[in-house]
Image 1 (spheres, rainbow over the protein chains, first blue to last red):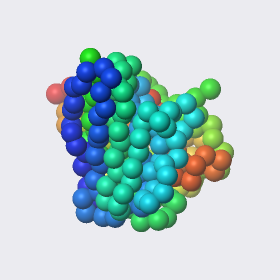
Image 2 (image 1 turned 90 degrees about the vertical axis):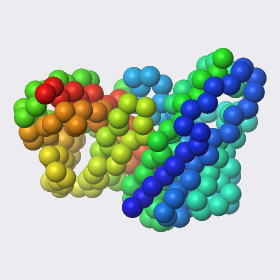
Image 3 (image 1 turned 120 degrees about the horizontal axis):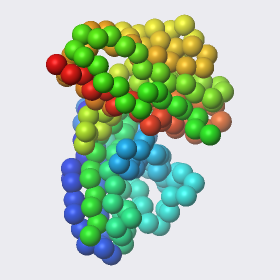
Length: 117
Length: 112
């Protein structure tokens, strides 16, 4: 199988606080993980690509100082939303690629619903 | 202009009524077209990858096909449990090696 988990599944926080979301590949090693954001009735938008042991690559328009990504091991990547504001409320989904081949499909986690009050 | 366009946005079918979902793309240098199923409040579930025109893949009641400019997801005799949003995504040269560009999805509802 190719199972990806996320924790927490939902979180509610106050404006100005930081929130950490974990993404784990449970039964395979993932050299590359991805973080997406999905607004209601919209498609998935790639935020950043995370490679184990190196700095993440952020998509245009995504603030790297606000969305901190750490990929410390082959099975874990974390996304920290710093100083969260209501406009950061969204559904955050991670995915992971098996192996190192360019054409591998991505397997997605169940998502984390972030609500900032 | 959207690079990946899915149609229709929403589709209601009676149980057993076969139909097709469309995904058209304008990117060049296609390196893979992917179909995912997404249930409400969940992450996408991988269904198929297609790499070249003429390729077909099947899984239970689903069959995906690919041409040079579009892909179809055929649903044969759908059941209520097939209700979900179906997402299409492409990977292409010119974007990041691993990057997937998603369409907005087709929300399928199968009525018993």
